[in-house]
Image (cartoon, rainbow, N blue to C red; front, side):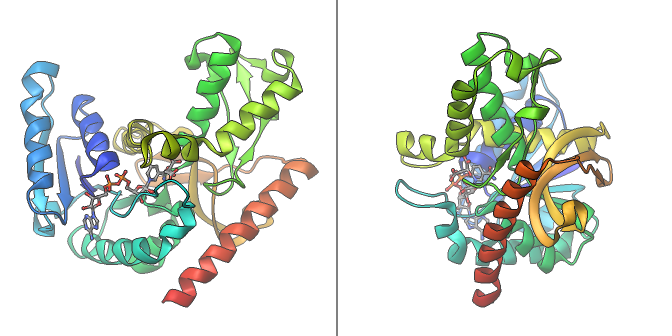
Length: 309
Ligand SMILES: NC(=O)c1ccc[n+]([C@@H]2O[C@H](COP(=O)([O-])OP(=O)(O)OC[C@H]3O[C@@H](n4cnc5c(N)ncnc54)[C@H](O)[C@@H]3O)[C@@H](O)[C@H]2O)c1
Ligand SMILES: O=C(O)C[C@H](O)C(=O)O
């Protein structure tokens, strides 16, 4: 298993580190456009191997895609992160160009790869990578749902004073304020969450989850990386080990949930072929209405991308 991570910044380097210390891949190539940065971080991670006891070989590359040739999975994290006061959509102009040129290079050197997009605005950057790569939709997906769900689970674990391991949940829709939480599908050790927490407290947690990325941007002046890098690595693991994990993943919808030609987070089965199956939940009217709002927002930003092109 060879994995390339494009972008050796905060998220990319964290993802490469998790892939290495959890031995998810035999070889991890970290690539960045900035001279020396990827080589340095890859070397640093490799020098940690005797301490943390792993065999994964990490290799750095300054924009030399020949080193990435034949990758099984490519994670694209290259692009600007937002600063306080910005929305993710404000990044579209710069990041669309970056994701397009990176995807062209990835396709040239790894034509059979599965691509995982992390760059923002997530849903529309997944669209950009999909139309550029011309890969089947099952091999081009975006990471956001695992992160958003993890935030929701972490906040719930804190509120209920239980282990985050015991909280199972699904969040759907776009990666932004229109994401669709699904309390009906949230359980704590198998118990419906609504039996353990009041509506008001749950609503506050859902609201905090929706703005969870912004909360961190405000605190740090740039966006998060530990949870996002780990979330992307978890998707790679599901593919590399053919785990058939059930995760919310951004993919082009082709009629599921009555939605076509839109890139949205939905629960899927993730395995060796990428998205093995899109799971269609039986949403109630209220949940469906929220998903339609999310669709409307993502489609608006997709139009911005079309106009840029
Ligand atoms: N999907 C999510 O849930 C999620 C979570 C966190 C961050 N993000 C997004 O991920 C992206 C990266 O965030 P970060 O915090 O790692 O930023 P960062 O600035 O730390 O790293 C980005 C890296 O991309 C590199 N880069 C820029 N253009 C490149 C190109 N053409 N080829 C190769 N490398 C290039 C930069 O040199 C930089 O090292 C941002 O767009 C951010 O908004 C998404
Ligand atoms: O909030 C951001 O800009 C980064 C990322 O999408 C996140 O949710 O942490």
